Image (tube, rainbow, N blue to C red; front, side, top):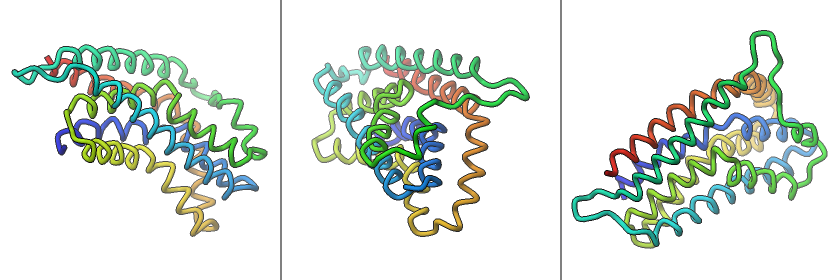
Amino acid sequence: MNGVIGDILPVALGVAISPIPIIAAILMLLSPKAKVTSIGFLLGWIVGIVLASTIFTLLASVLPGSSDDASSPLKGIIHIVLGALLLVLALRNWRKRPRPGEEPEMPKWMHAIDSMSFFGAAGLGVLLSGVNPKNLLLAASAGITIGLAGLDTGATIAAIAVFTVIAACTVAIPVIGYLFAADRLRGPLDALRGWLARENALIMALLLLVLGVVVLGKGIGSF
């Protein structure tokens, strides 16, 4: 169990450090319907993480486990493929980074946040956490690690819960904090939003590069 948690910890942090969802949560907190949309987004974010990680855990649980010498070629191949895809995404984000003096390009759906409903925000949360390519690859890596570990049902649920809590914390903390200290957090959240918007591509490129290498290393170590 502890070994599995150690393996999925960096992957969960990779999901947590996602500038665009954090920016979306902050914009919702600064919108006229802050409580409605931010809570919906947080719930959708959590549901997406749980669904993605659970699906990959179930799929991995039916695959052959490790052999007697503790090697797992299938697990290794899957992680090498996932690591390579993460490196491709890293390169893509590096190329998309704004040049000095250029304004960063944000997704068009952000302009609709002020008029978004609870269910619209929840659906957006699910899409960004469970369908977004980067987070989907990370959830796949975590789910495969958990599913091939041979844990019992209780330990599997606990591992998914730990992954979800860590992965969701960067959206949950500002949303929950804002509910209790809206006036104090408005200024810092707006400043954080601006910084994340400017540095989004660079943050994602470096994050995906590190995670890609980590997942590749995990794959190579499985042989």
